[in-house]
Image: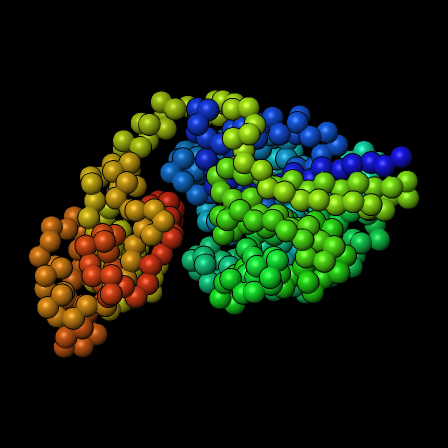
Amino acid sequence: MTKKINVLTTTDIHGFIANNAQAPALALQGLKQKYPNSLLMDSGDFFVGNPLTTFFCDELPISPLVEYANKVGFDVMVPGNHDFDHGVRYLKEQVKHLTADYVCCNAFSDNDELLFPPFSIKEVAGIKVGVIGLLTSRMSMISDYDVTSGLIVKEALPELQKQVAILRDQVDLVLVGYHGGIERDLTTHNEINYATGEDETFKLVTNTPGIDGFSCGHQHRVNHGQLGQTLVVQGGYRGNYFGHMAFEFNEQKEISTRQEEVIATDTLPMQSGKFYSEEVYQSWLQTPLNLDYLIKFLQEKFARNEMGVFIKLEGKTRKQVIDSFTIPYGVRIYHLNQQEYKKFTKQNWTLKQENYKLGANDFVILTNTYDVPEYRLTDQFVDNIVDEYSHYLKQHN
């Protein structure tokens, strides 16, 4: 008699659980009821990523996302890079209240101790399932130093290989939850990303025999396919998709069939949920934000002393400041000649720090506007500036 196991995956929810039925992640509350004999896992960037999560961190000791995760019924969860944005201590405090197991095999403390267990073993319909957690190797490239100074993230591949070797003979099914993306096309195997080490799904899977299912994320993309005998799913952003890997086992508990897909969450019945006080949140959004240190924060964050900073804000409340930083590129850096610089500085700025230059006729500026010639753009950033600045204020006051 065969047994079918459903592995359901999410990633990059980023805390989008607004108190209405418009948030796609709310529909995930009915996911496990739709799929019997299932294991539900999340591949990171769950606790941080929008103004609501900043409110949770600033005002509440335990994030309402914990209640949401428990209600959805996650079995295993993995940290993403942004889950560390408010510090290791904050993340660990949230994890203590989860019913899910929280795992990661390559995140260590300064004392070289694992921050979380490397894997979890669950039993689903008599099938033993092992889930290994894994974080992108390049935390130091994509997170500020004050976040990573107490955190050591080791190279993903050797740590993964070590844990697969330990786990393989203990379970019938080996899964990996990886907070990182896909660097090659799953069908042609052609490169689709620069080899920065930030996204390594193809490398990890093809160099690690014994993995049955691999859930990744980080890039906010939707993808699925098969590499050898390993199923791969990547479930989008904000809960708009979920991954589904189906495994059938024969009487000897060997996999007889395997299949993967990624499904739009709007195919599930929409659900609501009241996980926080909307009135208190709206009041928090309308409070003024201390802007005294914003320029200093931006110069420290981007480690550029010889850089002018020019910021336009719609107002001083949290909401107005949040709305002033365009998503996804909240700030951009340009290199201007003297004529362009003079024209640029004549605009009306809420905050500015000028007279920084590299030479007699060239200037580097950071701004949140797009009123600059695109051919002068040298860098742009997807960082959640207001969220990080709020955390900065808490540390420096």
